[in-house]
Image: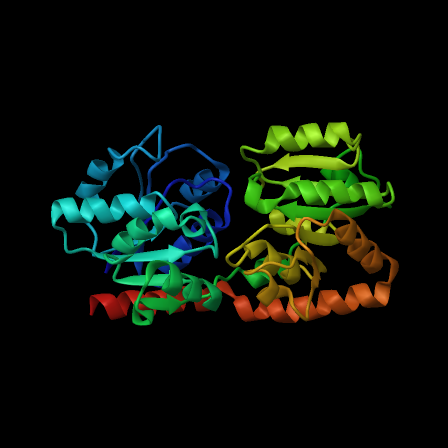
Length: 363
């Protein structure tokens, strides 16, 4: 059984991080999994996977992931693998079109990682999505809500959809060691309280609300932003406009997220929408309280074991953070409850379910 995972690149994102974490596990379990990237940029996740030397990594070396010529470059790989497991748009489209052109019999699986995207929000794309989804043998939904969205959006038979929830290496996060806060950034004192948000810098993740919330919090509460992306310059300008330069630290893409989370006090997720954000589970796994926007994909993970606030409401976010930090008993109660929830999402169980799916399709 030879499986090829296909994704646009290994930049900063939940789907990308998931591949970094799962591909080594697939191969440890005897399921041969390799990786195909449309964009060959050497992002930190890609460099880390190369260091592991656990799979073959192919790239199309495309300068534009949206270039339709990528379709023809994919065809040769269809002849080498029994099954393609595809993640994200536009790889989702290019693989299907490559299969149609080449008359390949390779099985196709697609994972839908979000409850919302441009194609789902605008009905004009519904026809194309319905056409493309038809050619996937199975569509993996990481939550029940995503499954319901796809049934409505793409008119898919529920039998084609399978739910496999995301997971993380819970032990890795739980056993991570903390470091001194001043070792993270020279502007941070050991007595400061640290908020941390781990996410790509794009509209969906809404770091803007988190930054604005600092205006309503004491100066000893500071923010670590882990990630990068197209909105970085906008966020840096916002920090300057609000005169928060000494309270917001832009750390870039980091591979030591477990350590950074363990060294922080509160984990923030302020997204406009989500599928099943790994950063929620990661925060819970390091036994830190999670404060998150009350949106689909987040609500189901956080309800009852974390704290929810109205998306885009920086004042409410600040209030929730202050309540946590002012009440140690409340703080510890949320942290412990979150850790118990995190244990339900261990990555090994996720990998086993995906291998079962591959075996079912290829038997």
